[in-house]
View 1: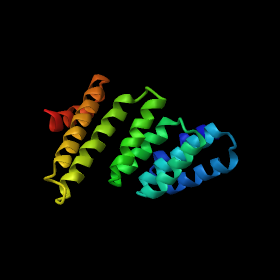
View 2: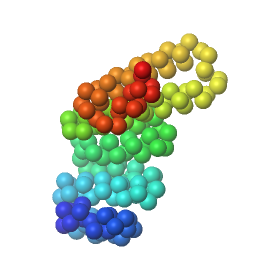
View 3: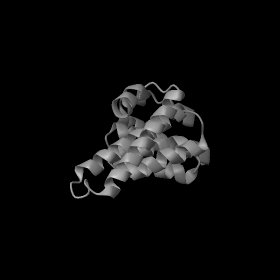
View 4: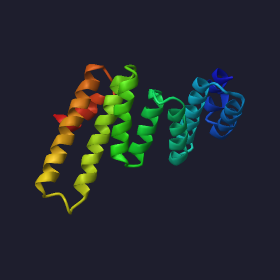
Length: 170
């Protein structure tokens, strides 16, 4: 049943509400953790398409609860955190995903680098801390880490990283 839902006809038609109904049916009919983790991750993906980031995070949490090594759920939840400007949580998820799988490592490094750059931007918008030595040290460290992540993503031939590396690290 999981394969049918993963390949959901409704997902490909961008009928995400119908897709959610398919997924709910699959969850109700499945007892295997591996299938359930995939279904909850897919449900999170559909929630993202419906612009329900909170619902997506709940579903990715459930997928991770079912399988704490499910790297895809960490990547997708990290992307949600990044959109929510929860930078440290995003960085933590991208870092966690690197521990469990070497596939898509370029993507993981790229997104972790973006989260770090975005965090520097958030620090820069906080006028109360901009001039302190700690602020300067923290932002420099984050930018070095971001550029290191971008370099790792480039070495793994992740396509999206080249413009980001040029924009932030050259």
